[in-house]
Amino acid sequence: MLGLGLAALGRPAYINLGREDALPRERTVEAMRLACWEVLDAAYARGVRWVDAARSYGRSEEFLAGWLADRAITDVTVSSKWGYAYVADWRPDAEVHEVKEHSLARFTTQWAQTQALLGKQVGYYQVHSLTQDSPLFTDEPLLEALATLAESGVRVGFSTSGPAQAATVERALELGIFTVVQSTWNVLEPSVGPALRQAHEAGAHVLLKETVANGRLIADPPARIAELAERHGVGPDAVAIAAALAQPWADTVLSGAASTEQLASNLRALDVDVEDLSDLAEPAEQYWATRSRLAWN
Image (cartoon, rainbow, N blue to C red; front, side):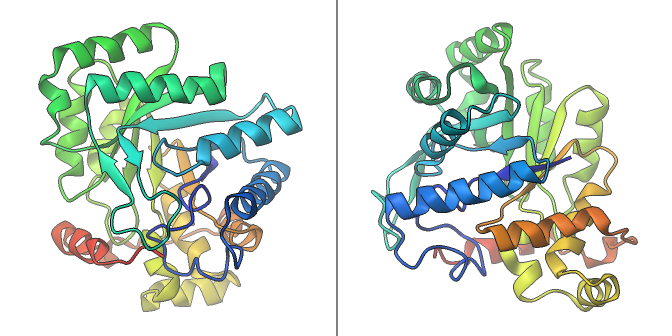
């Protein structure tokens, strides 16, 4: 199943190659709202019924809530995330765009903010970018609060990033609270795959993000990706996303499209059968070092 992630549409800057020409020339709040709604409309018309946001994606929750209300839509699954706060004040050139804090206070504040905007339409709520060194693992009051949320009917989960994603997934699932896992997986960085397969088999809902490697697989695709794209008459993004959809343990694969054109290109993945591309994998440490050098734009 394909879903839509709003990381590139809820704020004026993000780490995403090839996004510059996809967005409005003037990235005002209203211009970005309209751009977000256009992509949401196009996704809904094509059958996409999962939208993923986050407190740190600028005004993504606000944009999504407005769209759902304006269109009177109730059949979309909404997932969001807490843990990072957006601090760029709508400035694309800000030195710092988001600040991470996995604390009970941050969870309590951000869950209230998410509820105020999206209410009961949020069915999945995730810790944003959980890593091995997160204080969450030993914060009993926070873990109790998350367990209480899970008992209320909201599926509680976490997203991961960094070269130790697999270890983080395994450790977090041992807590017995989380039933949703969202991880970076693409043909350049598939190292978390075995851990996600185990999570899926244990009953967790697995989402894949950054399947085009923040645009790297579009801007400079490996030769085999480019060859497959030409053979199928699609863009390299479709091949990369098709590779993610081909993973039998992947429940939802997120498109990070920033325009209706990018979305249409992404959705061509549904028409592509891919071969084994495991030989394209980079060492995880190398992949994440490269990602850390990508500019916000």
